[in-house]
Image 1 (cartoon, rainbow, N blue to C red):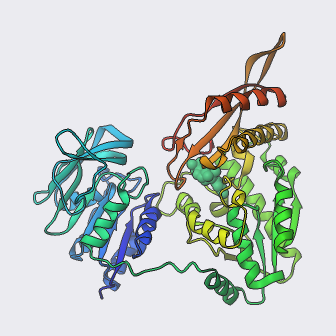
Image 2: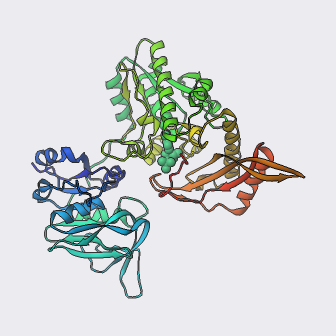
Image 3: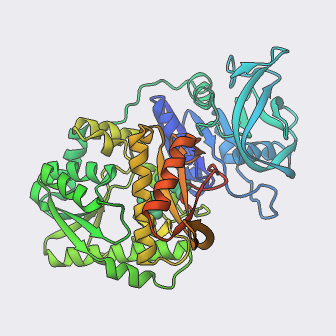
Length: 519
Ligand code: XMP
């Protein structure tokens, strides 16, 4: 049966599948994501009005490439393949893909040499010959060497001859770049061409993110049970707390774990908000447990897992103390899931609030009331609750805290140092009114000694790095060009106010290829 105004995303394991869904959701069109294994059933049960084939960390050039996807192409609906998805389409129709020795990662200029329905009238600028030029975002090693017979080539980049291909009659399109990523300037418009103009979906769907709807859903699920919430005091857990509190009042226990890995003054902030909203706040002092567990551990993933495991242990203990606790709640949002999803994916990092909850008592059910929302949607709700701009637009702080901002082994002393540096950096960003202009800024402790001089004395002390990035969705990010005056002041303050630092460096790497956090 045809499911009107619905797009199906077949997920080949791309970290961006949720972002594609997000873009379609923004258009007001309903979309489902399903993994390849479920897609045959999914298509035969509910035929969508269009199909998008996602990217993938895999390569179609590999020997074990399966590629028998007749059911997708027999559906007869328009299909858009993104990156790997484009190769799937091309190979199905007997095109040829190869691994290129000129890989493309990052921004690229795309020249449209023939317009098609996907790019009709869309360009960033026109070159001297009147050709449409688009800035797109690439992430691939495979390229198409020969396109299928009935396909046309519409666009190229310097390193990729076939960057947009298609068969207009059959409404099949492939793009080598990622239109779902904000670094492709016109990505939204290109996706919209496919969804609205080619698939003819109507913008009728609206995400129900109304507060009363979420609160009612929590009430229906939880009933009279008690809930413990992993409460860090950041916007996600705060909004989650307010929503659950509205639903079940004093049956909610907000558990704040003092890990010793936190930023300056974190507990004070959390206490302030808790009394404002009248939460049951439980503060667990667990510094020693964390430092002991992290002793001698160097691997970033192990550190994440240890921190996650300890968190889980503590929440289990807190649940056990209270007899009626049946639920464990956390402020997971959509991007957390995107970056952590290990199903069919190469795990980039295990975000502890998703990946590390292994070991959570089986008697606890998971409550994640905002897990389908993206950051700006959570911010919208936070505004309605009257939260301050500092909370709403505050820089995110990762669950494993300073443990992933201290390279290698975590020591309490390193933690104190990086906390002070982080505080100075933040204070100066606020003072210079630049805090809101960057998406995330922090300090990283590098446990390597370097020579310096202070007064007449030689110093042989540690290095810290400052990092500031600008991003829309934290999936890709650019380093920020901070004013020299500010950097100078921050550096001076750090050297003068924080003992044991002899050198301050500034991180000028973007994501990708780097990630935002250093570990
Ligand atoms: P990366 O380093 O993966 O970071 O580019 C993207 C965003 O995610 C945050 N981050 C985490 N948040 N638990 C969290 O709650 C984690 O384990 C974690 N690791 C990274 C990071 O601070 C940035 O905002």
